Length: 173
Image (cartoon, rainbow, N blue to C red; front, side):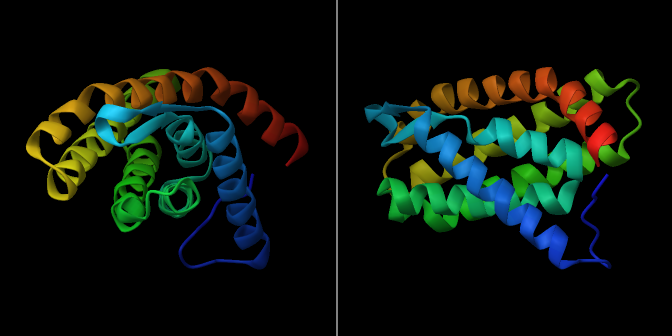
């Protein structure tokens, strides 16, 4: 299994992270539901960030999360969100991977749920602050519901797909 480590960063790992970021951007741009009240949308970005973080760890989760969020805002016409998304989704992916890899919480499903819940909380809080800074407190409040839905859907998808992807990685490297 390819694991991104801070002290051993290879070209193969860089290409993998670029590919995972590109996949996340494409999937998130295809499956998109606009949310006019929050000036944003619901997509599958978080699902793939969680999968990357659970499979490859905190560094990969942070890199793919930050770059995916940044690029999605750039391509989607939400330039005002780009730097915020880089930080919010980067921290989200990093902490999901960190909790899943290093906290001893029992079985894999429990670890995934706890890690995902922390990721959802970080993302929802981050976009509450972002929408409040860029727009109004009311916009920040309005974003809580849709971002929570997006995050929870992401956690569910990631936990459902995780065993199959781990099996494929173990089988094919």
